[in-house]
Length: 94
Image 1 (cartoon, rainbow, N blue to C red):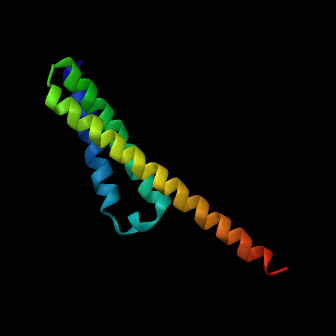
Image 2 (spheres, one colour):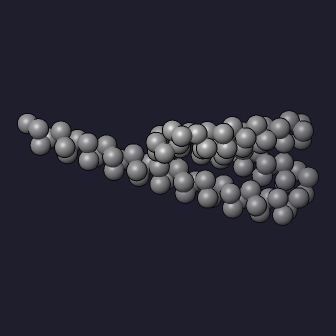
Image 3 (cartoon, rainbow, N blue to C red):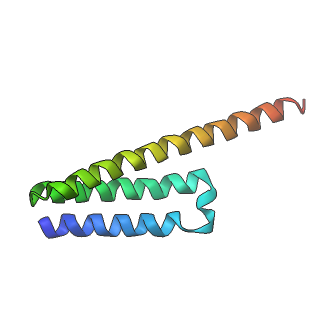
């Protein structure tokens, strides 16, 4: 089971890395998906670190989790700001 958790973390972090480096990652919605992959990966690696008592890795993954969570919150704010501005612009067309 420990090996499965490690590989889940590996796959999700790698997919998140691939998604975040794509050109379309400047789009907050696409970037948010990549950050969700990172979050799942860091949670899996954190669980793995806890199980094998690798506390340095656990601290690292905890910090990465909060960094990625901050990124998701920023993406949500960007999306909200964009959509709010879009509807305000459309109201001026009436």
